[in-house]
Image (cartoon, rainbow, N blue to C red; front, side, top):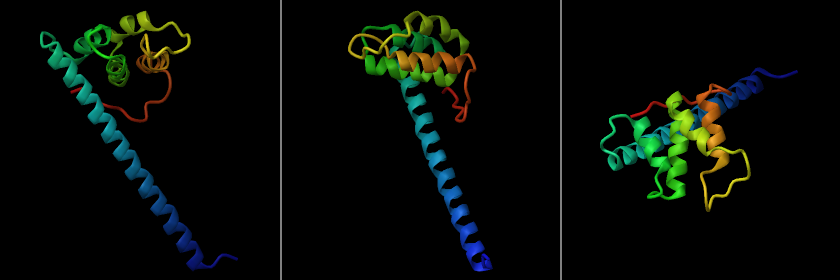
Length: 130
């Protein structure tokens, strides 16, 4: 038989775990939101003729003047924003083969962005564009 003290201890541990889990979720979401704003701001500054982060990011990921790492961050940002206007450009780069991070955009990141924009999967962390 479980005593009331053991039951309270178990409930306290469970509540503590849930609080820690919620804090971790909030920290991760905050970091993701910061990263989204950062890459969108970089793209907007680089392509000032564009008023929308989507358009600036689309130009950003297609530009050979940026590193593949930065362009992949742009792909990630487009997936987080979820605007369907990004699909034609993302699908243009997606071939579904093996990733070659030295020569082309990450196929895994492209697949995730395309799936997210198409509404496939679960959106646990909805981020907003700047």
